[in-house]
Image 1 (cartoon, rainbow, N blue to C red):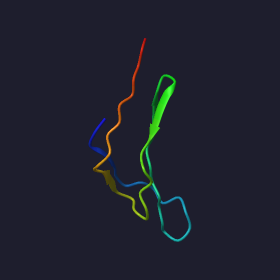
Image 2 (image 1 turned 90 degrees about the vertical axis):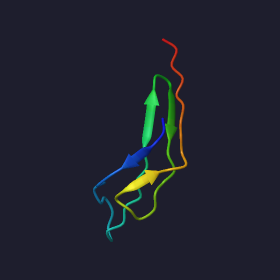
Image 3 (image 1 turned 60 degrees about the horizontal axis):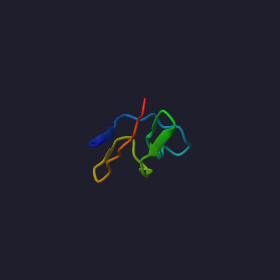
Image 4 (image 1 turned 90 degrees about the horizontal axis):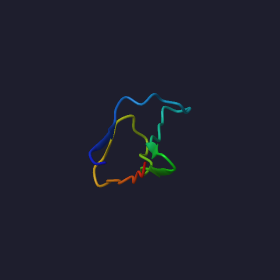
Length: 55
């Protein structure tokens, strides 16, 4: 997966700060992006992930 973005993430903390990340899985494997600091919109520009799936 490439070109991962998050938009309009709701603020879930006090003080209008948000630290979003994306956690995804397929079967038993999973990955997580880095945590974006103090934003509600984030482009994970230098991140790409590969999930292997063996049916």
